[in-house]
Image (cartoon, rainbow, N blue to C red):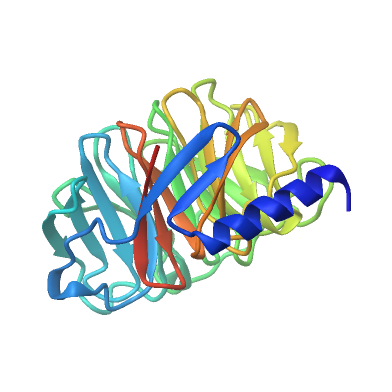
Length: 295
């Protein structure tokens, strides 16, 4: 084991011994597992994903109805919606620039777009109908959505397929990114999340390859970063990338492909959100909780 590996092992060991306080490099974080004032005092289901709208509101997706739970950043409950049967394996939730809500119903092969008030505006894919890597309109267990500033929609279709599908703002097909399972440059293996940075680069959790794959705005492969990435991904306004790894219990913080920090948590971190105040929220798919992580 080299010096770097020994240091990483030492940090993880210390962090797991003190899961509410993590020091890595020069940064210190506090972790609050009880920030949310949950109705009835419990989530009553796996907390799959979390999103921040940039206006002080945090949306948690839970795999039991009501699937959507909305809170203020101070943890006060606002409302919930999503009747039983709407989803089977409710997987991810994200906001676009207009505050619309995008969700994936992985096992039902669909992506839904809702207004900020929860009104269904658009569905991509066909309910309970799967497509292969060549399909322009069907998914096979889609797991995440990102929407670029120009309205283009990027769907991570990775549980069975190996691709990102790009649509325009009205849902018209543009291109397939990846689409071949493998570890060669430009191939993907279990993509589990997608984000778009300020330069229009498409950044993908290439999770089974234990890396992040980067493509340009036309879907051409640029490079990959050797960072475990089986979890969520989010990009802050300054292009800092946060990516979680459920197996390592880690949130890695990167800039320009370089690892800046690692936050170790006593959890299985799945979905990720970064609020406009810099606070990070993480859903724990194992423990039915949401962590609020702040400097």
